[in-house]
Length: 113
Length: 113
Image 1: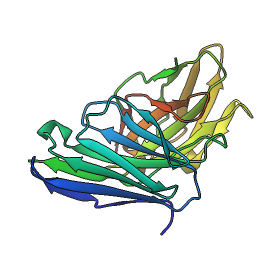
Image 2 (image 1 turned 90 degrees about the horizontal axis):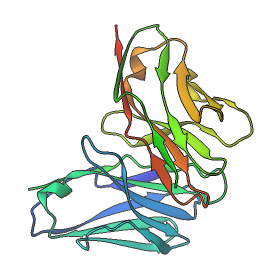
Image 3 (image 1 turned 90 degrees about the vertical axis):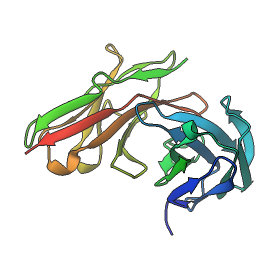
Image 4 (image 1 turned 60 degrees about the horizontal axis):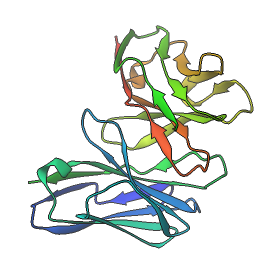
């Protein structure tokens, strides 16, 4: 695997379910990010992890719970979601202070029913 | 605070015509600027980046962008549009720490045969 991978690519879940999104970066980066991309809306930064430490939480509801066990893996745990949470969830990684560009995974298309 | 504004949420060009996608930034310090492309059901792919080394930046797929400080602009151009260029394009500016990206709202490019 190369770059940033995300699983699953598609997920349909009910409002009472608990599921997790997984992201893995194979680039040796030290920062990872979760974004939400909804139709007709700008990209929303949800969480930032630097060196496994969460440094940003942009007022994200507690039904979204991130986990970063190491610098290569990032999870987004989901529970009791709402239909408006349906979106494309993108993971990205970067090497902080070197070039600064972020590399994105293909995303997980989430549908909450 | 940093931000980017993309003028025109939809742009249509004929195949072979010039592509011009506009981006203006707001930053109190010299910025890092980026253009990303997103094809349907995929993540964002880096097209090019400006890091103050040169004002004219060349990217992949024949795209380039020019940093104009006096106009606070970073417009994306391509001399001759190809059908495969149809996608969503995002301009972004990086924070001073490099941890946060501020994305524009995106411009959807349609290429007419």
